[in-house]
Every structure is written in structure tokens, then in C-alpha cells.
Length: 214
Image 1 (tube, rainbow, N blue to C red):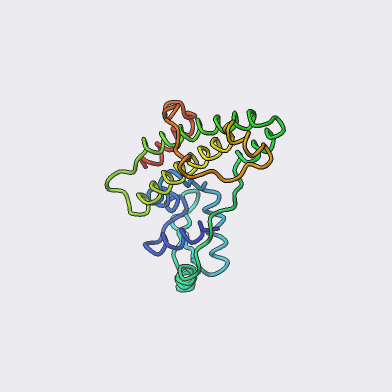
Image 2: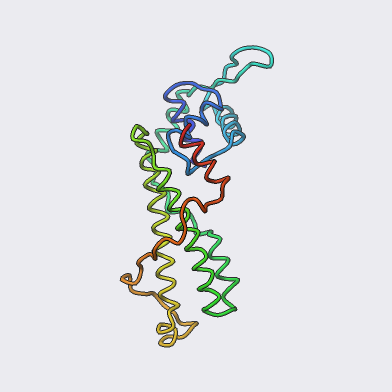
């Protein structure tokens, strides 16, 4: 899990307790990756067992806090990880692929209906990402993370446009339902947005705004 290396990097700046590390992570990365405090402490205990971080207790009684710092061994581990070959894109485990699998027996119209529903949701998400643009004083990592979220959403929309082009009646009549192949990229233009950020689920809008304003 890459989050462990984020914790090492943040502790390399200064020691901190778990909740403070979570706040730093959210400020530096932005609202597009939001681990919970349980994950943070679980990883901190793992890193402590491996000698990558050290802990000291601050305060006493019910107000005691566990403060962590990076050790020389943890510094070396972080440096080694940075020299490794970067990972490839994550495996495709998108819900839309399962939806298409389930809809396929209904023929092109059923598949197209799922694609169009997904397109509406991606436009909603894209509108929200644009609305939650990073502040001008945000960290470099946060600004780049925002660009990554935009690029990912736009790439999904281009893919959906290509899928719709494959399912056009003239394409199907030429090659058949089972023999559909790649479509020319000229057809891969996203359709106009059908919904705005206001239509995005409220709990997700609130979560993103909380993290943006943190």
C-alpha cells in the first residue's frame, strides 16, 4: 500500500501523531484520496514493528497521544522505494464493466443505455472536480492530484464516446454485434455535460468540500 510511504515522507518533515498525519495528507493530496484514521494508525503500528518509525507518548492519562518520528531505517526504506520502477496503471475493476457484462444479453440498446447512464455520472463528477479546484496556495502535489482527477474523468468520457461510436447502427450493420472492433479516435469526442455538480450526491460534495477547506 502506497499510503505507508506517504506517512514516511510526512514524518520526514516532522514528527506527528496519527490524526495530524491524516490532516497533512489531506491538505497535500487533496480530496481525491481520503484514507481513514484507522488505516493510518494500522500502518503506523506496522511501520513501528519494522523499525521504520519510532513512537513516544506525549501527555498522560486519557489525554496521552502517541507521537511518531521517522527513523534512519525508515529514511532508507523511503529512499529505496523512490528508486524502484513506478507501478503500471491499476487493474481495470470498474463497475461499468460488470454493468456492460450484465446488459450484453439485452443487445446493443441495453449496453448503450448503460453507457449513457455512466456518461451522465462522469459528467457530474467532472463538474464537481472542476468546482473543487485547488486553492492557488495549495502544494504542488495537491495541484497535480487535481489535474490527475480531471484527466482521469476526461479519459473516461473519451472511452465512453468511443464505445457509443462502436454501437452506432451503421457500425453494427457493417460488422455485426459480436464482431465490433476499435473505432477511429476521431469519433471519440465527449458529449456535452448533462448534469452539474449540484446533482452530485450530497454526502460526496460535503466530503470533498471539507477536505478542500481543511
